[in-house]
Length: 226
Ligand code: ADP
Ligand code: MG
Image 1: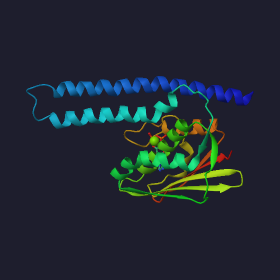
Image 2: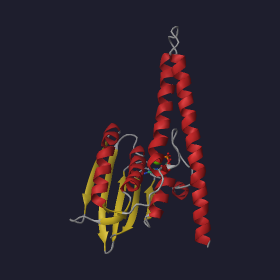
Image 3: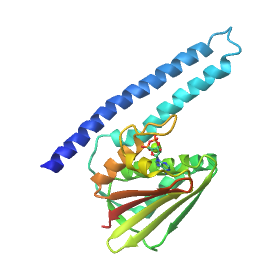
Image 4: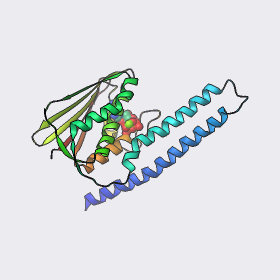
């Protein structure tokens, strides 16, 4: 009963988030259009660079909102396929490689266990989770660093670790993780982890964070093996 109420509350929150996000994306695009219209004025000279920068930032904000939310917002088919966790991780890393390279981040990936590790879930959603977590890790290293990804097997459980050598978090920040719209970034959405946590909950997984200010953060996810 209580669990059901909590679930309803979370769903309501996500429905509201979807409305907020559509609104935010529309806002970003309207702003961008405004600056592009200014740029199109033939007599314009010295404001050009500034307007172009505003327009680019508007596009980036909209793109980031879409990236973090789109897969998630797709109607759930509650598809449960057999997924090889190592393959999911490696394919996500390939996708994120250009982003890591741009940020001067090297990626170190290692698997303790020498055979496929299968869990049940939906590939797209799991990848959405991993993308959001890897993105946060990379964004925490503004001057570059190392992103380490590990898979470990304990009895009937697989652990995925995502470690960065970034700015880290205080205990107070750690407690705010997963609260809708909590962000410390200028262009952040504060929704990445809300989505991550919701997907992992649906997959009956567990996620936890530990962090040390100025040293880095370690995110650990546990899934039941199938
Ligand atoms: P966003 O990335 O848009 O800010 P998220 O929900 O993905 O939203 O993350 C919320 C906040 O959690 C971030 O703004 C940041 O302060 C903190 N955070 C998340 N992951 C990390 C990390 N790996 N290192 C440091 N801070 C992090
Ligand atoms: Mg994020």
